[in-house]
Image (tube, rainbow, N blue to C red; front, side, top):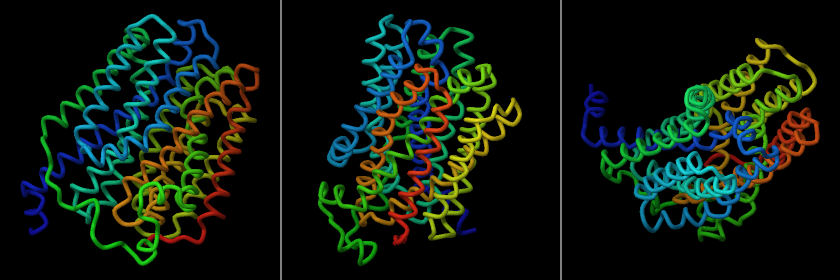
Length: 408
């Protein structure tokens, strides 16, 4: 009864609204990250460019995000997370609307750069809001919801974008997608400012190890444990990005897989990733061997990619293998976050997470050009083999570089 009464308090209701708003924003961010992948072939044909030329959009998106995400994180600490999150949603929506309206390839590329700037606010702002304004007792569960919401955004992107493309073309799909960010921004505006219930910078450190760690901004971010996590995220981004962005075109070039079937496999991969995140969150709360969980998931993902590289699995098996790969990769994500947390001093989680997730953008900046070269030079099998090789490197990074670390 006491727990039920607590759930009905105004403070808890405000907290729940905040969680919903932040998760909605995270869903939008992942939807926008994946907006090009299902429409790649249509946009390439419209502009009459090569895979490499169109992949420049992904490169500039990730370049801008990689360079600016950490400075934006410092800016958010000084100016407030909520207003920056709302601004990022509106900026990303505007960029997508312009990209879908203006008939210019270079404007299209420029708008992906603007989307990269908008993308820089999500992780620093999301984790700051959740750290400051959510009860510590709910933090592990809320972080799992946050990650899952992003995966849901990725999962619904292919099917909804293809549906809109069939109805109103890829430009119409972009314009409709732009409305999603506006709705998320209005939702955050309408709910108002949630009260601070847990200061992001507590006076006492979490442990003696955290107390002895560098605490100054850049000194902390450039310390060996944090840089090792950055490297891990770089390689991890090539694994996920390769499958998320190039599964459809890679299967089409390698086996002539119809786009509808390939997008079904991609939807299965992304949907099971979201389910894997939720189950992985429960697993992460019951073990301290987060490195083993991460390695196991990467082994499955790498094996699945290798299998697809050499065997045309057919319709049913393709969807099953892709879904298994997504489930395994999703299971690793909560443990991935706990690996970061284990080397982070108290009060610095948002800053550190914003920095190490820059690795996703570094990998995302380089990987599209590599994958596009495989496709442009008639070697689509290389897409899947490269994903498997990156999974092996990520396994080595976790197994040997982080094996001795424990969560504080």
